Image (cartoon, rainbow, N blue to C red; front, side, top):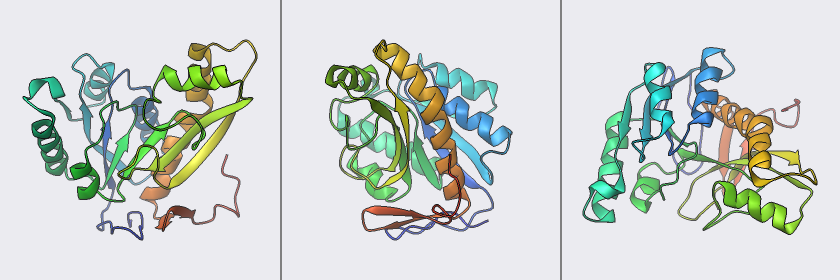
Length: 230
């Protein structure tokens, strides 16, 4: 199996795509990935590491139950952010993943990590980028702003990570209709169920099977136009 192609960086040849999943909370997207690997929705892929900045994250328990190596390091353990950034980079280098997956990770990924894994980090964001994204848009805040604005459609986006915030090339998006009686919590749950838990595993599988290529600031997917994606 050949790993995903990128015009910006080259993946090494692997039998299975090794992924490191970074998460800060409950780990529902992590569980979606674990389940998809188990049921073969994601193929040619193994999770080599689960990292969390939060020692109370239930994602760590999910990793334990699945027999996956996990590491927890909080920025609070370090004297300054630079020391934490270096430690995070070393943790990831030691795991040697082919792809890093940000699955509800609230840590700002430092430039030294982005540069070290250029073109090999993806993120799931709970809106249709470029709407309701960027600095300050995370968790329930995204859904609060969408409801305040009165938009009729929201959804989720999987994109590559670059030095900006939610500015990297978009891989997949899935819309979710907003209902007039939605609360941020209800909308968050529906977007997770109808969009996030579907397109994140799909994006990983596409990359694992060498169907994704970055050209400039755009992503091209082999067979995307010829098949029903959703």
